Length: 121
Image 1 (cartoon, one colour):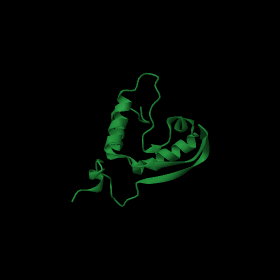
Image 2 (cartoon, helix red, strand yellow; image 1 turned 45 degrees about the horizontal axis):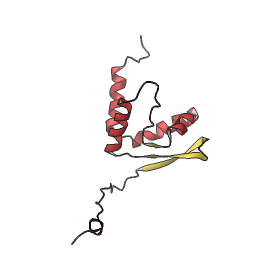
Image 3 (tube, one colour; image 1 turned 120 degrees about the horizontal axis):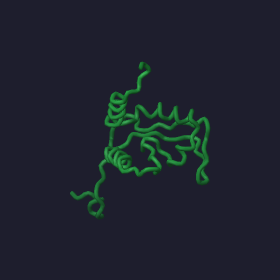
Image 4 (cartoon, helix red, strand yellow; image 1 turned 180 degrees about the vertical axis):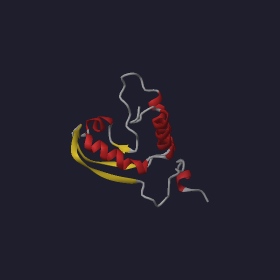
């Protein structure tokens, strides 16, 4: 039996079917207006392997002075993220941790281990 989508010329799409929560909406203490929309909340979400690869590639190819991309876990335009109050940035970053893929959390840990940032000198 032929799948209806295949018969219509569409390719079937793969999707994650896990029952764990893959997103969370975080209320901002200090809403931001951008392009006619007020951002009073931002959604955090799990991202795909392809999105991680694209984010890493975008960072690697970042030209001097170019706008740094927002990690796709945080679902908002870069202009909104850059305009956020620092308390909201702190809260978002803290809430983002459970949604980060291991590849990025381990890369961050290894970067901290190789830098000489300590309180003792």
